[in-house]
Image (cartoon, rainbow, N blue to C red; front, side, top):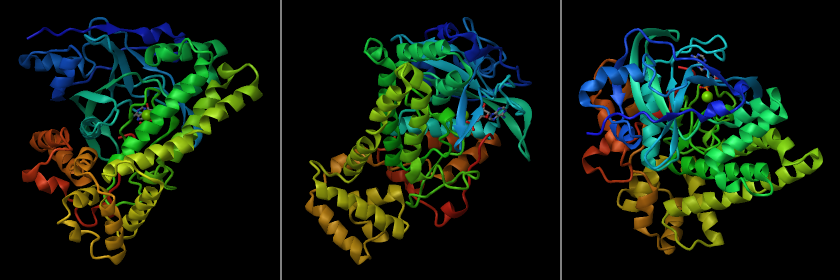
Length: 476
Ligand code: AMP
Ligand code: MG
């Protein structure tokens, strides 16, 4: 086997030093490796030997800083539930950027790694349970084909974390194509100079979108490209029933990856107002609101970029609005296409939009499981368990069948298995008690969610009424 090879670079420190605070992670008492993503590690060129478990735990707890690292916490701001705050990495440390054999650059970040100047009263730590949850859900998003940050390792700390009850502590290693957020731009615009904003913009373009560097209006092009990425992302979420739960501007990545798996969850019964997060009292981040919020966040992004779009503010606003005004139409077009894919409709026409709208209304009224419904449509014979008894649905079904749905297409777009809340909880409960088997089994199934798993049908089912009381939490 090839030897471990850290290839860390630290281009983030090329930015003005207001953007970060150099600091090592806080060591933990007793690091023990709980889970390690060998295949991701291999892709990153990090091949550890099986017997090196203790060494892996040392690296991915922050107790040993790898060669070439220049650890730092990042400064950023953000709109949380609509309100502006100065934030920053309050419990995360960026070790550096690992460059793989193809030259791709990935942030290697420890989450739960101790206090920073941005901790604002927090303890800088995370529970083992929530870090395993982020691991499970982010890796399952990857399996579903949704753009996301990845999870490389979870290490338990041997320390207690207080969140009301006492929990075992954990550190997650997050791998991202970067951690630059809309909130990083808000930070630059609000607290930095115009040169700082320019540096961040140049850096971001070089790192993610070098193709726009030489255009006449790079800042405007950046707004456009980030908008397109966010539209793609939210549509992918909606395709699989994912509710992010906390789409604050600091949790919106410029690279278009899903980031920050806090109160997220997958919807069972379809409802556009569905929310799981205990703190989202006004349903701001409900399933069906995610496109409006992405649009809102992009307005904040545009606002931060304004001085770079044009020296003349009026002109800058006009240009930015010209981009933002395209959001709705583009989103709608892509969203219908996504739904057509799920329904196996090829060469869609205008009337097919009505078919989609009617189906969703029926699902809402009859509280139909979002994932199961499409599988039932594929199989036909199991349909009576769902809506078939309803006359309106019989009519809908007839209209749909006239469109000659293509089964192979449906199978490509409709996952059989999603991380159902009760299975996620079951895997986490047993994992924190030391039994990783259920976690491992679930993760394995979730890595191939579009395949049939005839012997594992129990993972596809929704338990009656489970939705009603399930809640998720932030900052755990
Ligand atoms: P999030 O809701 O995870 O996006 O976090 C929002 C902000 O709170 C970020 O600045 C985090 O770094 C910070 N934060 C969350 N949990 C903690 C914690 N336990 N200690 C310090 N900062 C935290
Ligand atoms: Mg966050």
